[in-house]
Amino acid sequence: MKLLILLLAVLALVWLLRGTRRRVDPPPARPAPDDAARIIVACQHCGLHLPRGEALPGRGGVFCGEAHRAEYEKHHPAP
Image 1 (cartoon, rainbow, N blue to C red):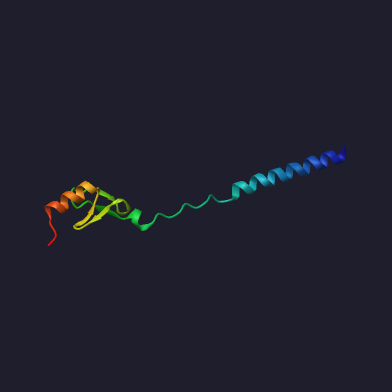
Image 2 (image 1 turned 90 degrees about the vertical axis):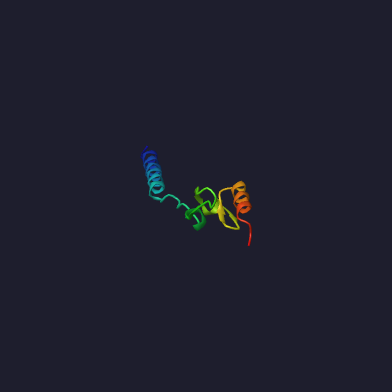
C-alpha cells in the first residue's frame, strides 16, 4: 500500500512539473514585417495610400493598379 501511495505521489509531482514548464515557455516570436510592408506610398494618379509592396511601379511613380498606371502614362507621355 505504501508503494502505491508513493508511486501516485511521484506521478502527481511529475504531472505538476510538466504542466508548469509549459506555462513558463515564452510564446513564439512573430516575424518582423519587411520594410516594403511598412513603407506607405501614394498612388501618383489618385493619391490612394497603400503599402509599397502592393504598389505597381510606373514611369511617373507608383500606382494602386494597372488602370491608374495606364491612365497616368497616357496623359503624361515619355519625353
